[in-house]
Length: 298
Image (cartoon, rainbow, N blue to C red; front, top):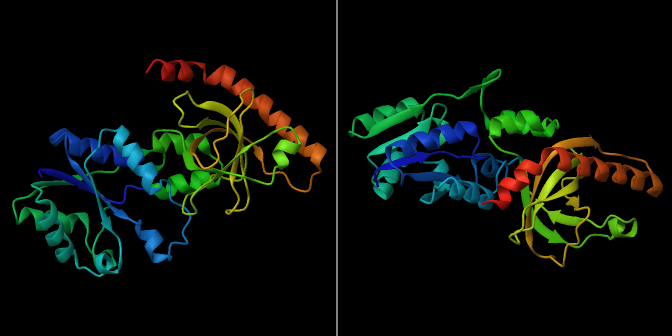
């Protein structure tokens, strides 16, 4: 193994892309080494629900980037208690790399005592090339996963997209709901998103649903519940979706339409959803035509 890049890579945001691109500039077949679960999950007994990418989402994004050589290190008690020297020695024994690429803020080892500077010194003494990628500045500071999380939690999609370098999306399994949507004329896909995944601010959104059936993603009115345990609901207007219960679908968020409504009756709810659907139709007509044409031409 010649080149590796190392980190949590939660979100694969534009800052991460800079690190990955640097690694691949030396070695097109560079290996990406990451951890599972990410550190914050481990230290919160897996109750942390602010991941930007699940395991499968992260792998899918990396594969689309052409990163097919991925190694996952278990982030467990043994890993946590290793000194920086022990961690690097075992990593080198496992991968035998001659070059390593990391971000400027990379930490590792017991109590996060290992820094990018420590890594540089350790590798230099062993004639291993070390590249520390400086921060990618955007707006008022460097691109960071935590900054993206806060933007999404506040419903600031466009700002989050700028830092991510793509639209934010969730992937989950379609399950049966209570049937209320069907009763009021708006049957929805109830998408059960993994509990670790960050959902954007509760409310209604214009979005796209990819059913994974080979067709282009479909415009949808998407509802994010206030409860972290509730499913993301997606109503796809003007299309009949077959029985896909148990199938995995991806929902991407494109525009925030309104805040979560409370204390309203059924008729008021129907009017709100009808308004969301009309907004989705107009948004799809005005904003997504070019994107859809590009998708179909692949």
